[in-house]
Amino acid sequence: MEILHMAALAAVLLAAPFLLGVLFGKETVSGTYIAGVLLLWGSFEAVAVMANLRGWDFQMLSRRFLSVLVALMCGGIAALCVRIIRLKKEKDIKKKENGLLGEMLLIVPAFLLAGSLFFVYAPRLEGWYLVPETVNTILDTNSLHGFHPLTGQPLSTPKEFGWSLMNLPAFYACLANWFQVDTAGLLFRCIPLWILLLSFLVYYQFAVFFFDKWKKRRVLFLWVYALLLVLGDRAYMNEAYQMLHYAYEGRAVLTGILLPYCLYLLLSAFSSLSGIFKNQEGMEEEKKQISIFGIFAWMAEYVLFIASGLFVMGVDYGFGLPMTMTALSCIVGLTGLIIKITKAFRKVGKGTWQK
Image (cartoon, rainbow, N blue to C red):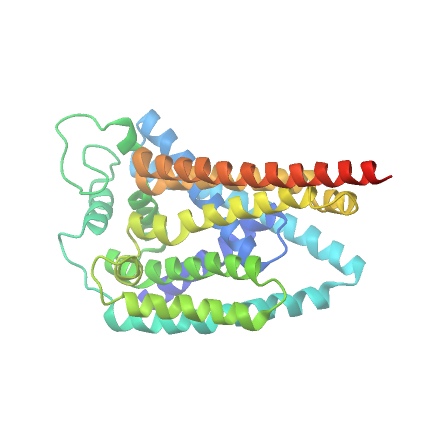
């Protein structure tokens, strides 16, 4: 029976983010899935903050978030149907399906390499692990209050505002409650593989960004990442060790998924903007590639990324690190734009002078 519950949990973790991600209108499976995961985490963060403000118990939070998730999935199904109908009218659905299948075939082999090591070294449940202890406390007491959200230790004073935003253990508790799976199976078998897959999908975005038309280089890029995870597993303080042994913790989610994807979003945005000023002849063509919907989708992803950071690590890390990275990236991006604009004006001035 436990196997059936785990299979149902795995099916939902694979299907729900994809349906949510369809709402963003992305062209790739990996981009759609990651956007859906951000929406999943961001929506849970919104419900969890409401639960903290109104004093809901855990069961109330679980029921309300389930309702929100079902509504979002229904919206995703409707968007997917509209997309399929549109593709059929354009008679391009066969080409799209082949492209999506090829994309997944690039990701899976490297993921299996690192995933196989996880099955060999997967840790056992111990009482002192912080996140499992907190998840068990939530399930046993039906409470979201009265204990530290990361250590599970009882609190004599009310939680600080920053602590009340760390809701990753509550999310795991909802999954355990819905599918009736034990904490050990959830946190040491299912969630780590899911987090590892998400990390590969994020780095596949970089592979597409740097090697757009060279599929062999994309494969090489992912295999290098997989080998780095395997080799880094030997060092206890290495991030690779965290990804393969403690992927259910907020630190692994932040460093393996959120921060790399933040960098990808910013690189993509500045690359698109700098393309506008590439040259005068290509200006109109570049403008056509930037749609209003695409801009709003990017902004929505970034807002959800911030919400996901709060969901994982609270105010200090979930908000501070992304803002620092954004500020640095903006400085670099704006500097690049100024250089390109200056060069464009110089070319225009030189052409006018020659005439």
